[in-house]
Image (cartoon, rainbow, N blue to C red; front, side, top):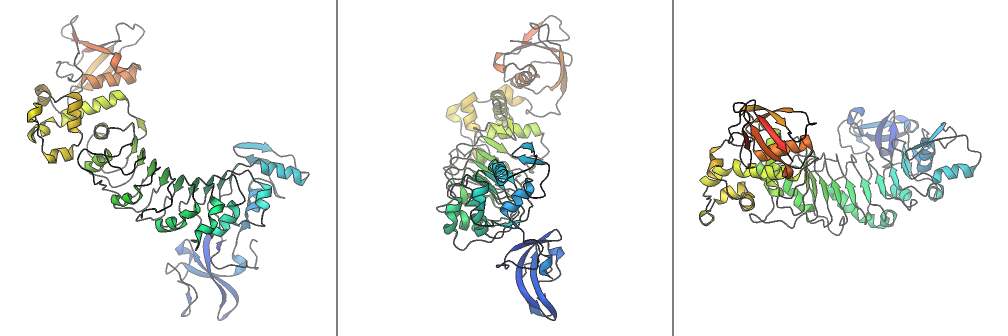
Length: 524
C-alpha cells in the first residue's frame, strides 16, 4: 500500500519513505494535545528531524540522535510495495508499462500483452534483475513470486524498505535458483531465531550488506542463515572490531570489509582460520600494523588459503607490515596504494621493487603483473641496496663468518634467502651507489638493433646506476623480446667502431664507463 492512511498490521519497526527521506517507525498513536494518529519516526538523516522522540516532556520513542526524530501523519508515509509489483513496474509489465522491456542486458521491444500467459512468459525470462530504490517492503501474497518469476538467480533489492529478515526470507524462499543477493542500504533488524530462516537461504552463495549499519557480531549472529555463503560484502558499516566465527562462514572465499573503522590490524587474527578464504578486501580502514606470531623466516598457518589482499587507503607506513606478508603461504596478489608508505619521498618504482623483493610469492602488485625479469631485477637490486648494512651488522661473503645481527634479519627477513639465491654482493657492488637513486646522472643513449634493419633507433634517458639486468627488462617492454634471449653491447661515441660487450647482468652502466651519446646494440 502506498501513501495511504490505512496502516499495515505491524507498523512498529517498519521502514518508510517520506518526501524522499528514509525513516524507521518507532511509535504509532496519539500525541496530545493534537487529535488523530501520529507516527513517531527516526530519520536516517538526523538533520531531517526535530527532536529525540520526546514532545512536551513526554518520551514517546527512543532516538539515537538528539534531532533524529519527528512525528508525521500516516498519510505522508509510504510503507512500500510488494516485490512483484516492483518487478512489474521496473520491467514494464504493469498497466503503465513502457514501450521497451529490459531483460538481463537485452532490450526487447513490447507490442502489448494480450493475455496473462504472455506476461508470464516474460517474467519467466528474468534471471538477473534489479529493483533498487523501488520501495520494496514485503513479499506479497504467498507463492506469487515463485509462480511468476521462478528463474531469478541474481537479485538486487538494495536501498528499499525491507525492515526484517523475515520479509527477506519470504521473498528468497520463493526463488529456488537464487545465488546472489544484494541487500545493501536496507536497515534490517536482527532476527531473534536466525536458524529458523536458514532453509530460505540455503543456496545463497553471494550476499551484499554494504551500508546497512550491521555490526560484525550481528553478522555472526545471522550467519547460521547462510550455510553455503562464499562471498560476503560488508563495506561502509562502521565495523570497528572482529570476533572469531564459530561454526559459521566456513565456506567463505571472499570477504569485503572495506571502508570500515578497523584500526588494529591484529583484529584480523579473528578471521585468520577461515579455511577457504582466498580474497580479503580491507581498503579504506585505518590499519597500520599487523603481526604473526611466527619465528623469523617461518610461514604462518593463518590465512592458509589467502591469495589476494587489498589494503588500499589505510595508515600503513612501516616496512614491517610488508615483511609480515611474506609469512603468508599463498599470497599472490597485493594492493596497497594510497598508504603513507607508498606516498613517501621514495620514487614509486623504488617502492614497488622493494615490495616485490620482500614478498617472495607475489605475482601481482597493485593490479600489475610481476614478470620474472622484474622480480629478478628487484631481488638483485635489494641485495645490493642493503649490502653495506648487511656487512656492518655482521654479514660476510665467507659463509663460515656470515653472522648478521638479529636486528638486521628482522628488518630484512629475505636477505639471507637472496644471498643463497644469487650469492653475496662482491666488493665492486659495495662501492657503487645504491640503485634507484634516479637523481644520478642520466645518460642519453641510442638503442640500435643491428640485425633488425626494420627496427628504428630508439633514444632513451637512463640513469648510469641502472644495471644491465634492468636495461634488459626495459628492452623486453619496448621490443617484446624476453630478456633471457637478449645480448647487449655498446659503442662509445668517442671510440667509433669499437664494440664492448655488456656481459654481466649485475653491473651498472656506470661500471662499463658508458657516457652520453653512446649506443646500445641489441641482438637476439
